[in-house]
Amino acid sequence: MTAKLHQIIAVEKGIKNRATKHITSAYHALQKVHTMFEGQSKTYQKKDDDGEDLTDKTQLVQANVDEVLAGIAEHMTELIDTVATKDHANCHAKADVVVDGETLLVGVPATHLLFLEKQIVDLNTTIDAMPVLDPAYNWEMDSASGLFKSDPIKTTQKAKVEEPIVLYDATPEHPAQTQILTKDKVVGTWTTVMQSGAATAGRKKELQKRVQKLLKAVKFAREEANSVEAPQKEHGEAIFNYLLK
Image (cartoon, rainbow, N blue to C red; front, side, top):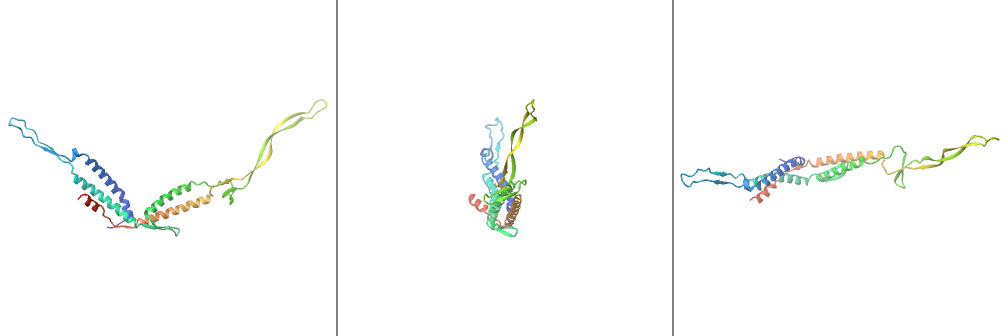
């Protein structure tokens, strides 16, 4: 029975976990030579009829190297065959990346589509973090600098100045009475032009829309590529027939 590549990918992890668990267990078992792989049978014969009767002693062999290796071969054969089936199918697993009816990439391997998908996810995160122009200002692109510039904003510069005021005019009998007052006086004008290298809100929104379309297209292509037929490959038997003969 021929499976689809995506079906092989779906079961590969479970098979690998089972094989790894079994091989690890077998490795530890092979190190227990004195407790699992050795046994003995001891019988007692008393010297004369008056001697004490002692019970025979038996220690059974709990494991056999060939049986352990056979178990390893069984699990590894399943894993090797599964990965071989996947890898051979991957050689033919390709698809086009199509966005809005336009083919951007032709015949992209499934493994590369998976790589692209991860890169586009990272790119999407970067675009989401893009700064946008402050809507409080009216911006225009300056072709000379490549930056956005705001309309000129005029503000006044003030300074503290002292001015005397006459409280009482002078009379023949008394001099004039005055007082010094401090006032804010406009002494100049600032003209400020804001500059920014941020993106317009519309540009950011358009990029977010495009990256989502691209991500969707790559996912669709990957699913299409992974739907290729995956004929069963049997490499494990040949390997262990040689190894354990």
